[in-house]
Length: 410
Image: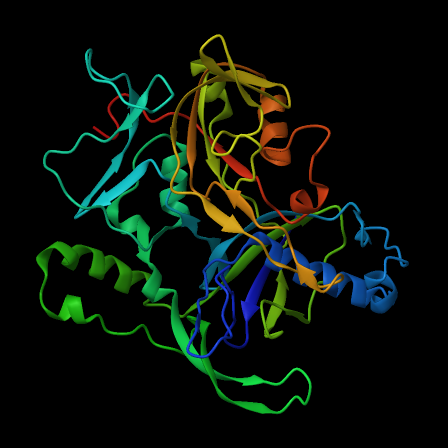
């Protein structure tokens, strides 16, 4: 697996699936983008570097040994796409906050799957409910990202500290841009066709961290978080995207056209980079684990992951040599992913997906370390794969973690 740091040199447009372009419409951007955005940028760059005739490829005639052809992908796979930052010359990944991790005030709590008290029922179909034990009711914080230090604690089955989180507004800002509709016939400006498209400006070392109006008000609850964040950004910080690819020879320098309007991002190879790993021995010893979606999940069963099926009243899991029982899940509201097929010049099919950060608890796990690693490497795709294109684009990728300890999250 080869890792790349995609460093923006301009604002980027990561458009969501909401249509825009009509008079007065608003084109929203999403961060991070769908993994297919980075996959398409890298595939296009590999094709261009090889001298492949792009028109012939789009017509379905040209074949590339790694990219394949228009109607059949080759060996290229996007294995990971996530936010990252470079501090003191080192690139560190940033992680979406898993659905079982709750940040409230200065407290960080882990949900634990437990059975409901006798006499209490719900439409939830699994035997255990993810429950967070709170001393009092509160509203969890949103717009946070987990640092590598915090992620390593999560992989150890413990709750991160409040200083292991960073707010989105310190990583990027939205930059609305006004556009003018053009006639598809004359290519001239049409009257009354103004619209707004939202650009994303990632934080760079030459741009200072903005002051926070809420922090100026002396909110004591935020004071500790503010101090930790200020310490993080005391050194220059460059924010970008971390991409991992396999089955190809990725570009080692230069630029890629990333996102809408072909804005540029520099390619920086990360030699020697390694992802943190869970305690495989602990997972095998306890025979239980958590599956965390590292990318949106496109599943035939809706919110249920591939490999899971109902049998005798239980949801059993069997994929790539890992067997177990799905006993709990924390899955946010479904999202819709589509995209633009550049070769065919048409939209891709819209599909509902489970969002990144969703968590599934498995117990009674039967596997060895090789099978667990195989599941982590291949992701939640069955054999044979029903959608090789979406697999190549990086969907259904996962992280594996042990359950939280008995005294964690309480």
